[in-house]
Image 1 (cartoon, rainbow, N blue to C red):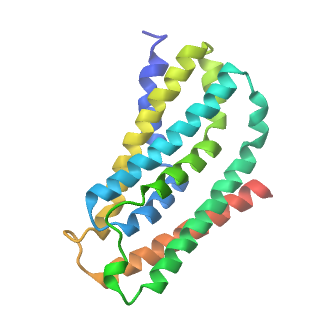
Image 2: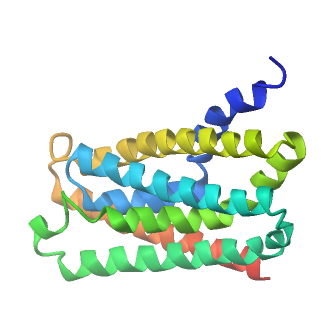
Length: 206
C-alpha cells in the first residue's frame, strides 16, 4: 500500500496543479472567447492535453536518459511562460478593441482549440522540472515514475476542464446577457494576463 500511495496521490496533485495562478490567468483569457460551455470546456481539455504531453516528454527524457542537465534551463522556460501570458493578454485585448462595437464578434463558440493546446505545451515545458526531479527522487523506478506522470497528467486535464468551465460562466449567454459586463470582464482578464506574465518574466530574469 505504501509503495502505491504516490501513484494514487498523483491524480490529486495533478488536479490541484491545474489551479496555479499562471494556469488560471491563461485559461481565463482563453475562455473569454466562448459564449457556450462545451467549447470552453474543450479549451480546458486541450490545455491539459498540451501540458500533460509536454510533461511526459520531458519526464521520459529526464527519467530514462537521466538528462538532469535540463534542470538548468527551467528558469528560462518559466520566463517564456511569462512572455506567452503577456502576448496572450495583448492579443485578446487587441481582438476585443478591434471588435468592441460588434458584439457578436466578441465571442468564438467553436474551433480554435489549437491555441489552448499550444498554451498548455508551454506551461508543461516550464512547470515540469522540479516535479519530475521530485518524482525521480521519491519513486526511483523508471516505469513507476512515468506511470506517476501519466496519472498526474490525467488529473491536470480534469482540473483544467473544471477551471475552464468555472471561468467561462460569466461569458455564457444563458447566464449573463449583458454585453457591457462581458466586455469589462474581457478587459480585466486581459490585463491580469499581461500583468501576471510581466511579473513572471521579472522574477525569472532578475
